[in-house]
Structures are given as C-alpha cells and as structure tokens.
Image (cartoon, rainbow, N blue to C red; front, side, top):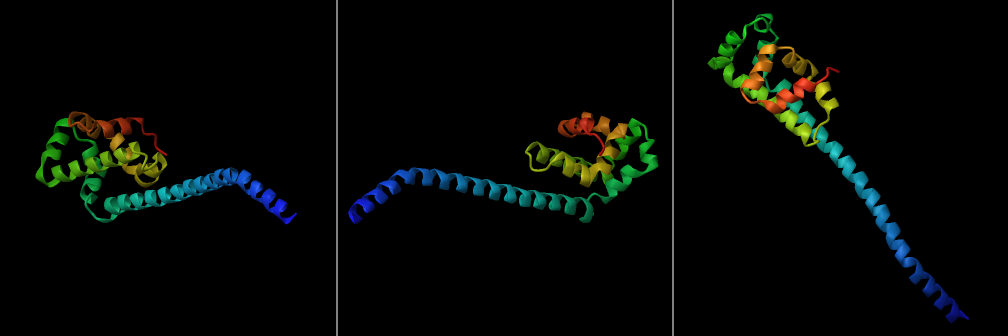
Length: 157
C-alpha cells in the first residue's frame, strides 16, 4: 500500500514538473521586467540629473542664456546676429549651447528621456530659441537639422 502511494506521488510530481517550470519561468520573467523597469527609471533620473547639472550649475551656458534673453539681441537683424555669433566671445559658447540641445534631442530619439522631461527642465529655453527667428535661421544655415525639426514641432507646456 505504501509502495502504491509512493508510485502515485512520484507520477504526480513527474506530471506537475513541466507546469512548475513554466510557472517559475513566468514569475521570473515578471520579476525581470519589473526590475528592468525600475533600473531604467533610475538610469533616466541619472541622465536627467546630469543634464540639469551641466545646464544650470556648471555655468558653461550662462553667458549664452543671458545673451539670448536680451531685448537687444531679439531685435537684431540677421546680418548683425550672424556677426555677433562669429565673435570670439560668443561663437564657441553659442555653438556649444546649440550642440547641447542637439544632444538632448538625440537622447530623446534614443528614448533615454521623454518629451515631458525636456519640457519640465528646458521649456523656457526651447521656447526662447523657437521664438527667435535669427536662431531658427542659424539652425538651418549651420546644419542643426535634428534640433531645428524638434523645435519646429515643439509645443510649449
């Protein structure tokens, strides 16, 4: 009698093992996806933190931000604007500023950051670029295609 129960138990275990394997795989997959989601959120937060640090706190873009914000600059003709951007005191910084936003657009295309992240952190500065006809001409003339396309489609939040 005990031998028959052991055989029945053994057959039961053999029958259920494939189902247990599948169930374990499903649970492991769900856990893996959850962990991936959490890790990707942490990574995105690190990327965003780095972007904010470089833009606002390192001081590299302060001069250009202030320059773009002046009324005098907003009223410049295209020829004057172009000459201003070629001056030694602003040329490299302005190029770096635009390249920085081009980099942000690249991160967006790679799904490393979301439109909402960009809007929360840089809305004012993107709108400032968009509303400046000289900057928009500059983007086209100097090959900032990705940035130009993004700004043209950008809707202020």
